Length: 178
Image (cartoon, helix red, strand yellow):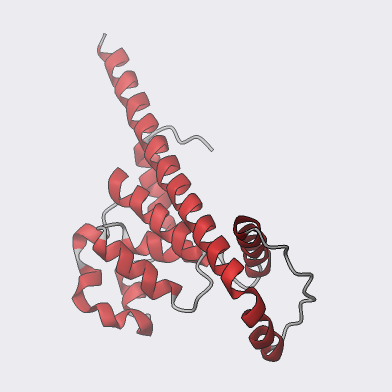
């Protein structure tokens, strides 16, 4: 997808991210108090948006509860766009989690040099508790690796798209002046 201008990118992102009021209503994010309302954390610039994509994609791969809190905390620390970081964690949702975490487990087993276990999935708490003891280390390693790779790629992709859009705008403006 190619966006003609950085203004179009900003407009699309503004339509996609939640408002400060919506984020304030989320009970688990109240621990951040007024930090979440800092205007620097809500601006859409090349830097804040690229950092938000990196943080959001990294946190989306974490196989832990509390991805929202981790995402917002990292966005505050690194001065990234909070709502965008927050929104991107929903890449992992009940529909995508099994595939993403299975891929993370396989990647982690490969990196650790372990043979992936042939585990039969069962949607129950008992299965989860029993299986977690066996798969947690490859899952953790794989999800961290996927998160870092996707975070770096997300940062780079947004930064590159934004730079190219600004460059095209500048060239078009320069051409009009001649």
